[in-house]
Length: 563
Image 1: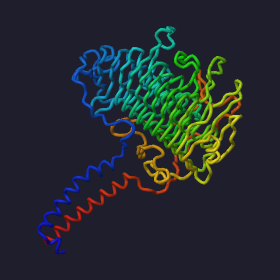
Image 2: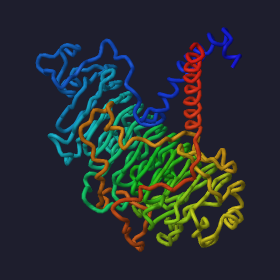
Image 3: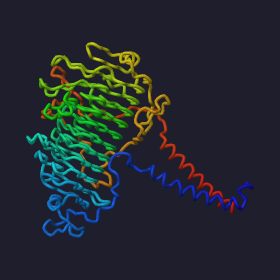
Image 4: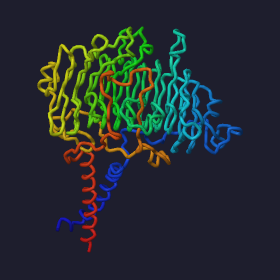
């Protein structure tokens, strides 16, 4: 006690306590924030351009000047007077624009005002039955941006247009260099985001995307309906980053039809009734550019990395007619919950409308490494399956063997199963060691429980370095119900949809001889019960709290010693 009676120590203790508290409080408050910061819309804090054109629900299209104190009432009225390079700034509120919002000029930005949130509601005056409904970037709108806006409804919530089918072979360009960021896009009649052929260099980042396929609402979902979260047909150099994609009628993301050099990374995907991420799929032959892709590859050079995929009906990640795909550092949890089709990581076949002249190539040269797949005991589908079909003279899903290494596979109370259906390379219901021997690869891979923490990071030392490198804390029920969005309605809890696809491309990887899926109305939403391990962020939080308590105790002790 003599130490605490020292005058120097008496003066130091309260100063030290206050200093520690001031330093650590911001860390504590950041940890306590409900909304995760690594995916979904970011806070709208950027300054608005001084020459922006303002729109407000309380504006007047007849007297407007576009200045902040004399805004337009409708977005389309503002678009009618824009010049290339203009920015349309939407004040807080709901915009009911009738059929669509159509951007026709290059380099036009539509954004919410700083610190505000605009909602484009395409359901009030138009139920979405019109194929033109949505936010459309027309063929001459390259360089456009949609930033910090909520779009509800539409045939597609956002669509990029193309000249591909305009019968002019000398000009088949589409809207390119489009950026869609920090938006909430939901309740579209079909796809949420539609990218048409030759719409290249599209960036989709920090968005929340959900409730596709409202055209099928009220019907039993089975993953076979054509209503993706992001549907890219032959658009090159697409980047999809840091999005939260959930409650999707069919596949969360695919890039097909010859899409080249895509990058899909750092996304959280959950509750897709079809697949999670598909590298290629099944496209009608007329959408391929045979000058650069004469073999009809569905996807070339695609990269899928650092994604968390939870609770899908079909595969977590699928490859269809792909060339040189790279699949690494992804974490898949409870995928293939539908029970009927495919595997956690799946090599599928593309039929390309069964046209005699189509290429229908097998997957070639995939590289798959450092992924984690963890499944509950109720999952009946294999970890990996390579498909073969006897139709059209025989179709194989893979040429040669895949390059694989350092993956972690685990299914509760069961052994992982691997299948190769190719007649000249058959492997039936084999374990990991047999699989490794069969493909002469997958070296360094393990069948152990990765023991994922609350951030979906492995705590089992054998699996460190595998799976996603992102920290995926549990998101709120829907970002669109937070204060930022100010949305008064959200239907993501009532998702239910199903209907045979009306697309001219085959909607799934099933042949006519396969049975229809009888998947239940709702996929299981309960994740695997994981061991109670503390994540790094939790440890930091506890440490901060302890240090603050020590500081407070020091102050109280100092007061007591003064007495």
